[in-house]
Image: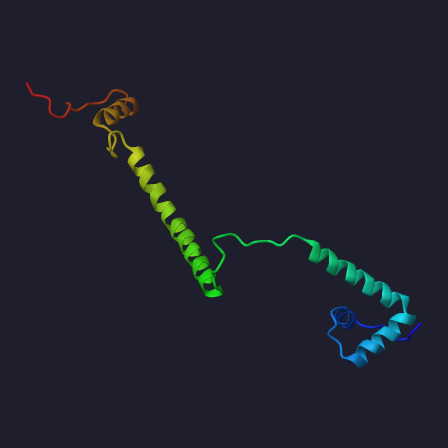
Length: 136
């Protein structure tokens, strides 16, 4: 068994025929004596073959043909839309609560409600005449 093992990068380059003849011959000699490196080569070959056997994936229609700059621009536009919605949502909610809070759009309590509360708190104290009532 050899003293130094072949590195993973060199085994990968050997598998892909990317080494010079001299280095490939050196790796071949090492693999003849080193079962550990030979096992790593076989595992790498099996992994490569399994990846090649996977079906190809077609990108979605929207992403096809877009360059990197166009994708970034679209992402920025999406983020800006989300930020605008997040900023306007509280304003819309407060406005809706304001409109829904009153009776027929009135925000101030009615005079009758005020008078009833006044009588209940003062124990029947003086009550002014209703507004618009004819004085006799």
